[in-house]
Image 1 (cartoon, rainbow, N blue to C red):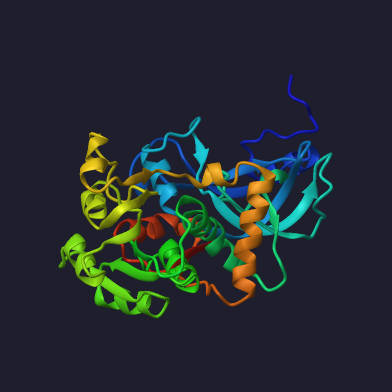
Image 2 (image 1 turned 90 degrees about the horizontal axis):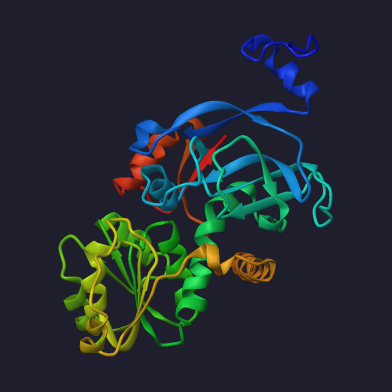
Length: 349
């Protein structure tokens, strides 16, 4: 028998009251019910309850857009269950605290990366994923930089530790991660060679630390890199493209060079014989993930401190190329897939 104190939830006019009486509230989020193209993204009402032990309820003011969102939408990176809220990065203000949360307070400005469920107005999230925002960093900036900036950090300091004088190759140099990579690497003393898709993007990359830019649609990457490095090749290639550039990246490396393959903007790399690394100069190949590099509180805090320190010291300038309403994320994802974006894209709930 229905409880007379709780109206039928299908009665839209009473939903908010019903959820409020149960400690729940209504919010909106972008969910998918099946894998596919951008058309599967749906703007839907969702219930948000009280935070459980170790959780906070977060009112999100800005969300990030990243290629991993597209990998999850298409099923390249399968999700645990459907329907699911997409999005891996956002910033906002803490609304409520669950039991055992003592490192945050209501009203704190916080941000996170690599935690599914980011495409939402309000959400519950484990406090272990959150970092407090220092005063100079705005929430919109944080949503543009958390995932990409932490990625740039582990690429430059953990995957291959860039040294002064190192020549390096950066793909998608005018993208969100690419611009941060170029700026930070230049500060470390590297000679930065950036791959871009247009003259406009080349100009942007050069303004953000690139010493040389290559138009990958019109130039042979490995040949051009050899010319720019006196035939030596680069110390490291940071490749977010995948199969389409894999061989070019290997051919651009100097002996003992490192290929850091950290994305699949084209398609997954085909299986290959590891002896290929021997014949091309005793090369190293690594396939890192940000999830591993922020898997513990210590790892996350170290990386976030380095990122915010670089921003505060003026080493990194956050480039937000475009804003979209969160409800219009399908348009934003299509633009990202078509490589029509520059810098970071911010989604506004």
